[in-house]
Amino acid sequence: MEWEIVIGLEVHVQLATKSKLFSGASTQFGAAPNTQACAIDLAMPGTLPVPNEEAFRFAAMFGLAMNAEIGRRSVFERKNYFYPDLPKGYQTTQLAEPIVGPGEIEIHLEDGSSKTVRLHHAHLEEDAGKSLHEDFHGMSGIDLNRAGTPLIEIVSEPDMRSAAEAVAYLKKIHSIVTYLGISDGDMSQGSMRCDANVSVRLKGEEKLGTRTELKNINSFRFVERAIKVEAERQIDILEDGGSIVQETRLYDADKNETRSMRSKEVANDYRYFPCPDLLPVVLTDDYVEKLRTELPELPDAKAARFRDEYKLSAYDADLLTQERASADYFETAAKKSGEAKLAANWMTGELAALLNREELSIEQSPVSAEQLAGLILRIKDNTISSKIAKQVFDAMAKGEGDADQVIEKRGLKQVSDTGAIEKMVDDVIAANAAQVENYRSADEAKRPKMMGFFVGQIMKASKGQGNPQLINKILKEKLDALL
Amino acid sequence: MAVDTQTVEKLAELARIAISTETIEEVSTRLGDVLQLVDQLQAVSTEGVAPMAHPLDEEQVLRADEVSEPNRREEFLQLAPQSEEGLYLVPKVID
Image 1 (cartoon, rainbow over the protein chains, first blue to last red):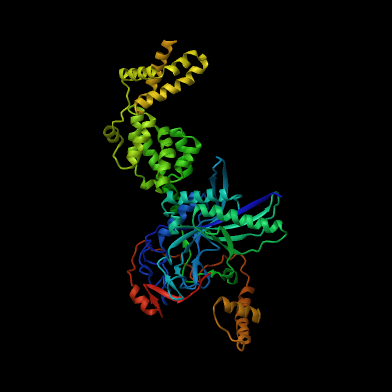
Image 2: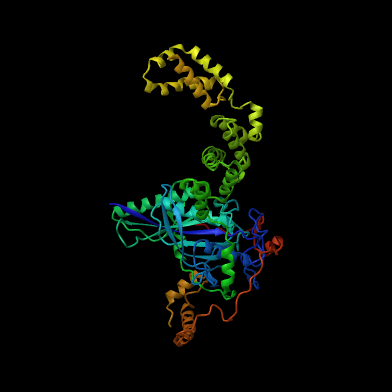
């Protein structure tokens, strides 16, 4: 039996406003507990919410980037449930008339293919506080700093068919919100969180299977693993003749398994109703159109421009535009060096390896775009070979200065002095009589390959600093003279 | 519309309200009476009338994104039955 996995994602993105959705308390991350929870956030009697215009602007920008319809009139509702980190006893959210209507985005998969994922809608809502369950002698500690922080909840259609597609979608959302500057998108700090609706069905079947909802998955890697392990669980049950229970499940990263959150099932009746404290928020056509003209260049448009302007491959263009910071880094390095392809190669090669090894983001790169451009310039003008360039790069990464400083200090300048190279070639030929003899007696077709041995010896003698083109040329002349 | 006692029990659980078995019949009747008013409203033809989200036919005024609330944690913590290390303490609730 061949099974098909069907996935829809609900992504919560914290908006990077300075103050909360309905109060003037700060949203700064990392403050001491409850120092940013004001009377409105605490649901003190007599308080009234006043919505933050920036949250609407951000949400509308997101909608425009998703090619979605923007709700000209959006209405808040109350989602009622009890939990200690929700002081009001309801979450103010949107249901019937959200700010962002249906839209779609293109996702890019690792095999180079693309696919369109439809957006069901996205709505504005407030975040809850945090519960700390340890170290309070049997009680829970509540920190309400996060309560009231604006979120957009982005709901996709069930259009994804593999864990890899879900990750690609999530990465695309991440890339869009960070390009727009409406969120820092930091999953480790909870600025972006993901719930996945997962079901399976036999390939060719039209009807969707019974789904389960996986809660609060907090990294790209876990999204992939959680979906895989949940789909396997469902397939096992169905193949054994069982049936899937529609329920909320929690992914346990340590055990790599999902388990039922039964407590969520009892109260899964939120009794939504329009919030009487808030009037409909109206956005005019002029406002929305003005926002549209102000949108920054988005990842897909940037990737297309990189292919066109810098002649990058589709793969490199997608890779380098996934994050706005790497796109900016690339453009600086490409412009300053005049060698876009080399800049792209260095970024996807040595630089990516370095950042990966040191667990750094591109913003924290120890080698700046200007420094990389400086290095490329020295490769371009033959001051150093590509091989030596790697040494220079490593030295720059260790903070030894710009390429020119490193080359000077370490004496890495490429030897392009014909006399010096001739001498090295003569020495190597003299020291390796047996190999020279082999070369002479070999088939002409085999000789170019045999030259590699001599080139290696000469490069070694030059400590890697000999100009490879020059070495090849002189060596060939000298060997051929012996024939 | 009549409300049966099971519905009342479920609503009470969702709303975290304790209703004793002696009063549950009475609560059902009273809720049913309220819903009769709703039935009357629903009998009115609203064909072609756009639903309102609020009794006031006005638009929401928005506020600029500025931090205007000072930290008043110590005052607020005083109001809580229990607190520790700047946190409000509540009976343990965990999933």
